[in-house]
Length: 624
Image (tube, rainbow, N blue to C red; front, side, top):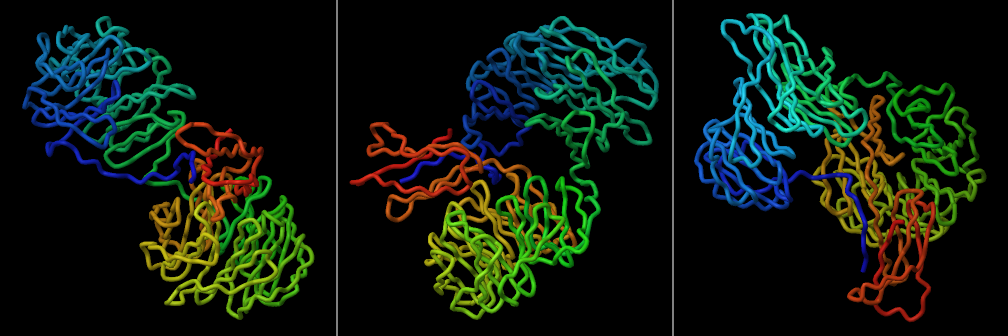
């Protein structure tokens, strides 16, 4: 038995079945409930956003907006206002308001607007009081104030409004109120270009805590977007460099990032001032255009194995070609050193990625893969003609008998258990890196295997024709459905996830080696990807013509694998973690006992339970 404590890094979108076929226009969350409203008076609720229940709203009118405030729910539409204490039992408004275009909920109840110069407030959504809000100035041709959007932030209600003062100008305001009844007028500017359209408010709760109001100036020549920002909802600063193409449609804030969407663009910002167009990403940094087959990281330096020579970076953004550096096929790190292998049996070692020292590998055959055991510290390199070379220190190398004459492309290890893969489905295993045994991979089509790694589900190998094989021990192999026929060139493992890459920008991820999910990593040119690594809690993939792509940080996944004997365990944790292994002989008792403790642990930790007389034992990993 095993227990897991984990946080997922990849999320697969899923579509929930709603309780109505009517169009839904808005959703809110409050008091443990999701509430969605839509056409024909539709109201449905859910506690988990998956299972939905249709509620009787008491109206067939369109409901465009819904809000939660003061412990109650209220929904509005052009010809309807309804309220409920629990989102199940709904009643129509008693007085003061028959319809509205926008509504916001807060601690004092609700504020609604209808696009004119009136605002309405209510403590319960049933009884409403209206008042006129006036933007200073004289309206053009009898024009009056237009209240266009309302929200609740910083414990105050906010209304965005505009007053056309001519055919090409307007005065623009944001009204603020602590209770929804008493309003302060905050004039934020006069436009000489045309009428202003308030598109959204979005608030931030960390960093500088800005509240962003998105707007666009419109005239016959189009729209000129801009933003207003405020740290208190009262004092506002103009930012005319807003990147909202054709006007912002909506915006939000979460996880340290502002996001605004326009009719043709999506923009993000961490400070509300500097914005990145996510649909038109910036031009990648200029760097060497060599084909890259592998990448490694050590003490702040990235080094990549590429055609002709090494390319290097101190920040992971800008890479430079290192003159007179070796041409390598594969690269790894050990004890703060880069170690690479290549054509003609070459093995090179470097402390900084700049200066490389060649070691005598003991072979002239080209080497294509290398690994270093976390169990016995043995270095193992594999290559053409079944070549296997080993070294205890990386300095003196010894040839080993592999039992095969086929090319070997990749090698991986679990503790001191090694697996090498190669041509025509070749699989070799070794318990010490010295004596090797040929295994049956079970591949009837004899596809080449290009790469192998070890992770929480055991060994996983990939190869031509979309081949993916899994094995708990390197001996017994099971084919898996990759969902592609593209050649898979490389596989790596990090923080609980396998990542495989290959031709046509194919990238697949899996938490268990069995279920594989295709990932769009933004390689719009369909680049062939030749290598992958897990560096600094991020996946990095490399490929043709200088391609280097890096993922966002991957949340760590704790995992525990129990060996067949019931005593041996392998624990997968983020590097440097502190954790305990606990045991229990009776889950119903709830009694867990510390069996082992680890500090500053390696990503893969092996442990054996030496207790005598084990019958039925349950394990779990606790951190810290």
